[in-house]
Image (cartoon, rainbow, N blue to C red; front, side, top):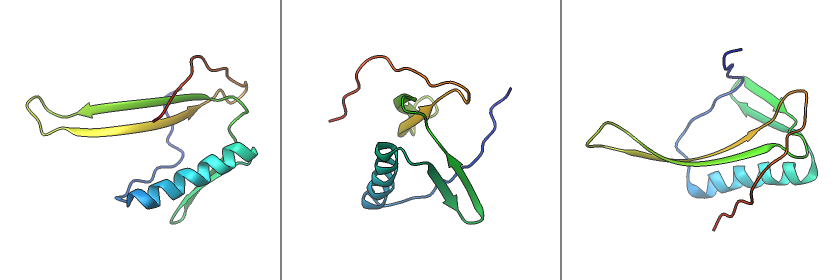
Length: 93
């Protein structure tokens, strides 16, 4: 099945605002609560399992010779019908 985007939001935010969003995600993950994402009239609620796959990716994209865009992506993945198991320890400093 091709990828189906259930929710998408993209906007320029301050570091402090981004940190607040990530803290809310972290708090919900730690407590086992569902995550509800909302923007305008759109919303989706997701319930990550106890051990989803956690992917962290740092990228530099752009045409040869620049200008380049850098990004850090954090992604949680899981099979809708099974709990996943992770491998390797991630450190973020």
